[in-house]
Figure (cartoon, rainbow, N blue to C red):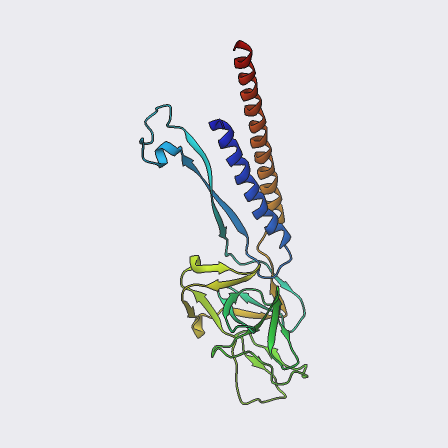
Length: 262
């Protein structure tokens, strides 16, 4: 295989990966708490330079580009737009912070910004993502519960406390809000759920962001930006494929000439 054909093929694969990432962003435009992802790619040296056989910037014939290398994806954790839903159990964090949720099947904890919760028949705040069911946790690590699942008079204050003027349960619960110490240790396990492979800090009372009842934080994906990125990636893929055909034809013509001479 010619070097140019190899470089073009690798470039086509890189653009295909980029398009898949963009497609996933577009597919989750309506997913609450979804965070946009970016395909991270970088130019790399030729193999001889990577192996340490020669140094870079020497100007020799082997000191040429080595194509593009796909590293993976990077999550952009900026806050998405807040949208009113009028559903009492929908919650949005206005500012920095993450909800603590627990997988009810294995008791594993996760973090999320998606606040599309429901109150089940037991009064617990729960949500479903994929095949898993999660509980919203309070500051003590216990499931958040309304005093009476059949009551329609409860509401959640701006500081995340469940209040019901008609019912006094004798216990005040406050929604847990935390901040990861290192965002690089956030591992995506669903479209809007993350496993933290490090430590988090509870947000102090005087620093807690506002929790907006009857609102949801929507996807941080901008459809216009993603469509522009998709067009650029699509055209780059097309150019790489054309280069592959051009180099393949050039190689075929060269072989035909050699065979004719022979």
